[in-house]
Length: 370
Image 1 (cartoon, rainbow, N blue to C red):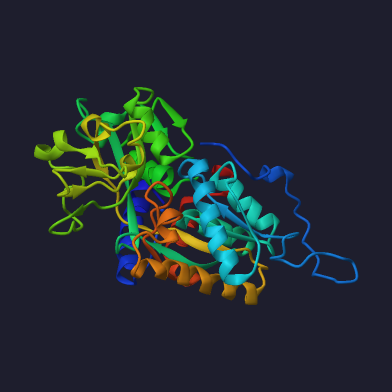
Image 2: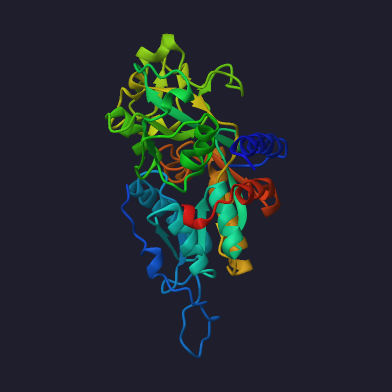
């Protein structure tokens, strides 16, 4: 199948997933490299052998996050989630950020009884195919069960089309990132674009900052619709209106607004305001992709069913606290815009990713490609 046909298939899939309510998307690590993780299946708990039970302090549940944003942000926010889950369940958890998307998948497969992970759609499909990792829930961001890729370029550049990117330097978050690399790769290939160099930066904010600092000519990151009245709709311009660009700046809480509070930016640029408060004045959105199913919360294939249900129920309750309290712990962890910006969570089943699975299989994407 040609890339053109594949891209058309992705566009069709996006419509199907959206119609069905489907969902989608620092190198410091606290986890051992995947090569150091044993692939031997852990034996069942045995009181005679003295092996600790899963969820005990001696054998905590391993909670894995892909390194799509700064690892220190993930670890600190993950610790807040850890504390909330421990209080709700009485179980022990250990948060870690493997060195890459691929390493996250490998670790879940290497420890099938002990791990749960927060991984994007493409990564989930590969993990499911590789060892049977199974989805339990999916992200919702400001009411959207899908997200997009965006291409960022300098605002003052002469780049006006995707074709103009040919021969330029490309900054990406991670070669396993759905919105940061895999989907844009199809976009570039369809346009006949061959970058001169592809630079892996270690996170979506870092990819945007690479262009901001002049280390790359363009970047691809996630796009989430802005908060604006009337509400943004598919087909609307994705970027800040020209007459509001000069007014864009972070507020005291670091949230990125334009025109007072008329337009709130939620794409990857919003996570760079500490390093680049003038990021909107410097970078613009060239184009966005078709819709992509949102990220997943998934469990290792042999994770105990009773513990899985207990943890899932606790996470849904954790998210629900924000219905009445904007300062809830959820918004300080996975709901924080510098973390994964999940405003809430909803149930998901494996079949919702069947169409995305067909794309992965048709494209011939393998774990080694990540």
